[in-house]
Image (cartoon, one colour):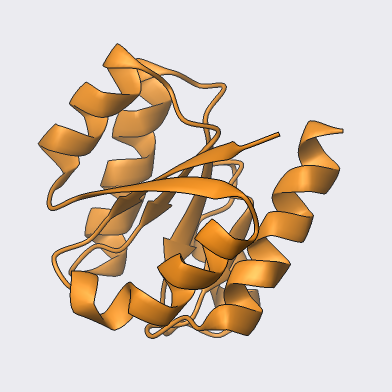
Length: 121
């Protein structure tokens, strides 16, 4: 079954290998440039997962909250350079599936698909 993933980023070129691997893992990936477009897409047709790549961690937090307000059933992942423990402290309570490094690659894509598959099972 195809997984639908929405990627919110202003740096689409950085995500090339990541997106290619997601597509190899039977995911459909749509890329949008900003939070407003992302929320509109979530409202129109909710994906199974939104990957948020925001300029700051505070903006990422606000973007995830915005997605939750539109559809709390959509899973999220956040691109960050924060250490895992600190990330979980800062983003606690938002139900974020996982964090991803600033330049995620194929291994990150495979890990993300495994997590998504597990949670949707």
